[in-house]
Length: 223
Image (tube, rainbow, N blue to C red; front, side):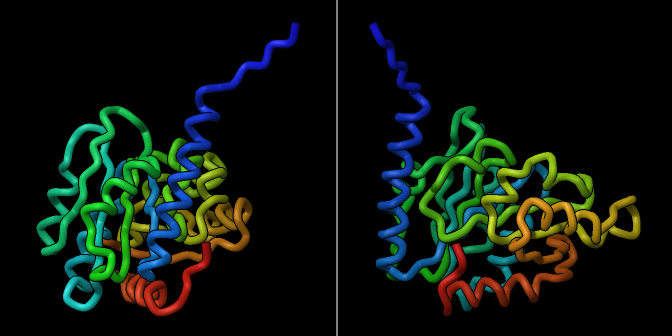
């Protein structure tokens, strides 16, 4: 007798991918690009989103879906800088968002009145790499306090991402961080990765980030 075992994870992932296709089609129908922001905890992605909402909120219609394991703290921080709904997903311990959660969030958003969607994923460089949320592109963030070899330690995330933000560059004079080596490590994993160098705290480098966001709205972003 032959026994074939079907892993539960395989079924769950397949269903997730089906929903992600629907999410991507829905966003495309309304012409809304979606960026899935992924990082380790503490990289500064919430602060970067706060500054982005503060600086561009009067010109660019941005919606946000933010995920966290236990609290709505990040959503509360972001909501201070926008009149639009910030959809908080509390995963209850899960280490990533999934496409169903994003699809549910879209039901509460007016996509005809939205230029750009941010999905702030749970702080983790492992699990989110495997889950398609229906995003246009993944944007991976890491900071100068995390070590230059981060991309080599978490290669799948950097391989899946199309864009990278190296944050907290204001700390470069104070930490033993080799910027060129960090970029080289990332490009070793993904030669096509495009970089932005920012300080979400001081605003350094955000002009290039903002130009990129405008380009996402006006021209198709690479997936």
